[in-house]
Image (cartoon, rainbow, N blue to C red):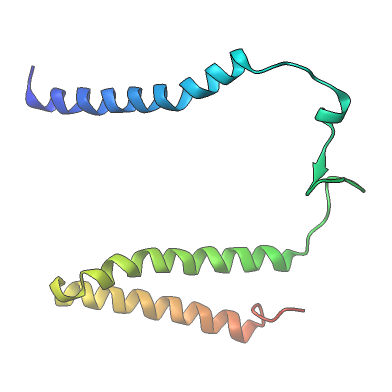
Length: 121
């Protein structure tokens, strides 16, 4: 076998081992746990209280905007952290690319601020 296939086989062995280690406790619990279904166990609840009202509630669109803004700036943090840890070893091109990225993110923050999306109403 060539060396590339050995690497693939090693990766496959780790994937199978991970799958087996993740599924084994679930299968053991499924076979040995007591099965006593009742209406009380199958009832829905939230924080220990019975649910009231419909499950399909309406949310304001503004909440989705907050979630999207959070995701955008969370992704920004994910990209900036490795760049900041390797800051002393990067080239000028990498510095310039991250500077442009930060400017684009800052522009989006200013746009959202001026648009009024960041105000809680």
